[in-house]
Length: 288
Image (cartoon, rainbow, N blue to C red; front, side, top):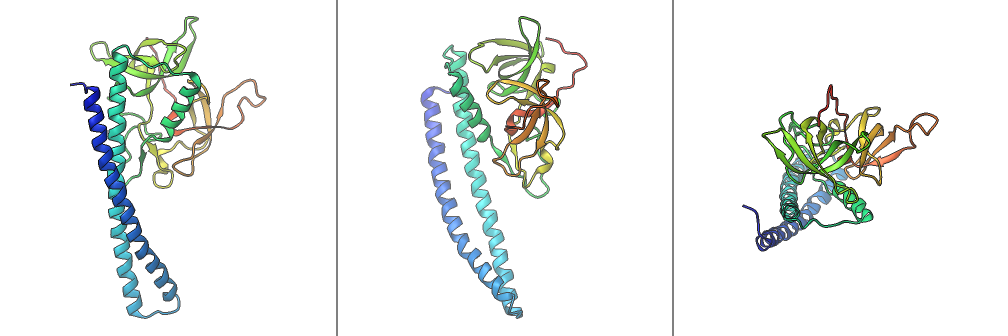
């Protein structure tokens, strides 16, 4: 059952209170951990000169304590991130309800570009645990073949203009009609205000999580890979080549867009967030 505005607000407030408590716990845990880390560093320096078994035993004990402290801090951080995602989901659900009720908010182009940038920067970051498999729609990992994008999800959609030209655009899922196996999507560009009915072949779901280059580099596209990327300050995807990979969770891909106006056929290096870099859709035949 859809949430009322009051119910949504209460749920957000409840999660914000829990989030505040978790942030305080994380801060307390971190301060406590710093004491142990400082002791480890001090004893490690002493151990370079003093090789006594007693000192080595004490150092090993501190390492074990530090490992447990890190596990506890990680668990609290993951709980806090889960609360943040809950809040995002609730707000997104309310936005979709408002849109379906005919109260779609008009967003100026400058504000839309900023919104898309923030959306990419705040996309949940996946940091795998030892031995954990990277999930679908994390970084370069595509969706499962049976995956159905949910209302409100962002996708790349292959649409045909009135002139008959086909382009990949950034769109938002309105609904998936299982009886026809087709999506209804809205062009994210407010100036277009177009709704399209498209087959699954013409839809590519965007990543739902960023990959952490420091722990899950295998979930990033390799250098030299040809991809589709959202051209900066536009809502259209074009072919590009990965020139440089992000080195940290907050960095973007450096890509070279195919552009015949340049002598070598490629644009100068441009930066595109993980969320807006996807594998090229290979279609033997596309239908509307």
